Length: 304
Image (cartoon, rainbow, N blue to C red; front, side, top):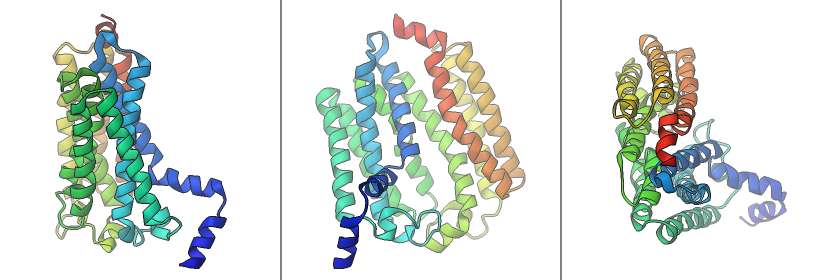
């Protein structure tokens, strides 16, 4: 133990900072910030002030980052069993559990307190609940049931709704619509990832859908079903008159691409079709949320 502490002290500062960055999972945190910013901007309406919107998104992002840190604290033992996660700081012992817990607590408390004191108490309560469900329910549930994906999709869909509530003071149509879109989007994305790494998940004792006995073809069929559900859900803002042709065209094209890639995965589960679905999924949400922000009808509502 003493040697490990001395080694940690001797490590270059850049390596230590890089490990902290790994804990917050930068790509996921970046999307949480973007999703929360979109929700906050829509929640602010005509009174939107970009610095205020950005601050709300930052606080939501800090709570999301805290979730990632605590997730790695809880899963450090199983992370060691999977090559895709075995090099994480806690899995390798490069960082102590104490330091990670302290880091996660500071992030979470700062985010929740910021939402409570600078914005709406309801958004702080929802953010705290989101953190608790992700860390205390979803993360340990992965060892017991494949339904963990459904449970995890709930906190996973919260960032735009949290941003919306922070500025609007209560949930509204756009907040719920963005929540529903992100909720449905997650299933094809995660089923494809779970299929790609099913051997690793199985070895680590994670009960992901493709790891179950007799589950051959089930991940693909479920991915297709949720992509088909996502398509009409994503078009609802246009049907309700809350978005115009720019958003509708983007939602339609992106939705059809998601359905097509899910259908290919359902028709033949393979590394190629699973990877293609993951790639399409990674483009889907950033492009769709960008369409929300640049749609003239949405912009007109925000200005007026």
